[in-house]
Image (cartoon, rainbow over all chains, first blue to last red; front, side):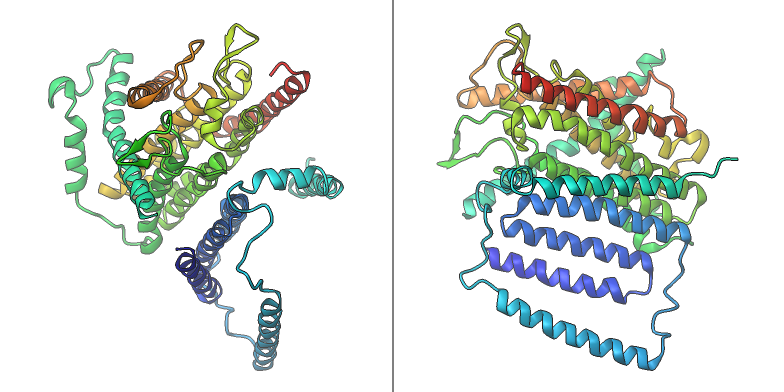
Length: 167
Length: 350
């Protein structure tokens, strides 16, 4: 039951990530990315990481991609005229680098793949909310606090950049 | 295993049927109640008390010409109403509607009156799906290629994103006292009394959280006094301007379904779900299950009427007032509620 669901989610994720970079209309690119994140959330859920699945959708699909969409719509970016108009050498080097990185990724993934099927700590029946909360507020408390500091700095920075110049 | 799948499919079918049936009923209630409040009669010609009016309206909407304006982005224009309705309908599966005391049906356990049992992330799932509703309004506004539509879409998304924050923070207090994201646990945590006299519904110790959640729910469903995205006086019909016939009806149904789910969430999170104040009913057997579902439905019906009541009582806000209220009042108040719950729990009175 899990394998066909995983395969379906994986195929959707790969297909729409190709759409996300190949379609000419920027709005369609963003929407393809939404579908990719949904498929990834489905894979997380199949692995028993229900919390990550929800966060994946709330943070990426619900917030960040909405901003992407906003920028594209408000700037009224036309069809991607710049795509494919680059130089030959650039395209060749880019393709070679992509193939090299892809091979490296596949090799690394094959080395890392677990032999007895994927199972993550604290997954299965109990859910992942409690283990993640516990880990954040005990083992990783310092890192957690540092991240909040970073976020506050980012918010202050954003407010500073967006403020209206007052005469 | 297939029995479990079949069970979930049956629950899904019943849930969808009930949700979609509330739409015509609410349309009738809305029109009759508004007439009552404005000293008019309202629709009273079709059927007894005008009860068949929604049926006639539906036939009208279905048989109307399916018009697609010339300069729209066809694919996105047609996708937007589908997204709106689908998002509204899929949030319901994590809401428990009644008490299950280990009942079985043909020898199979029912696993609670909820479409998706054992969903540990309960409320987070609802927030995740609901956050996708923004796409429907943004896409509708942009793809219509109309200034009013675009303004409506932008207003809707700014409003939804802003009030989502207050809504989420106001729920944190409830989750802290329940100790779980699962809505069934949230309901069972609200039995008994608080300070040995008051009912232990979350609305009593967390009144502030309940108020901020309800105000945010009005903003999230784009209902008056926060219906700025479709303010007729300013924007024709906002992001729905270019939509007609069933495509318009899909948005309309999405809004009412969203309202029903919000009313159910208010009931579950702050008004004890199917529990009664003071008395502790066991809800055993099928009789108990039906009683619990009836209590839950009565509360949801009251909050649905509350939505209508507020709509015909309060005037519309201005857009800057709406944003100021969201960020400068609702967010701080919800944080205050969260701090109070934390302090009360540390002091052992909650």
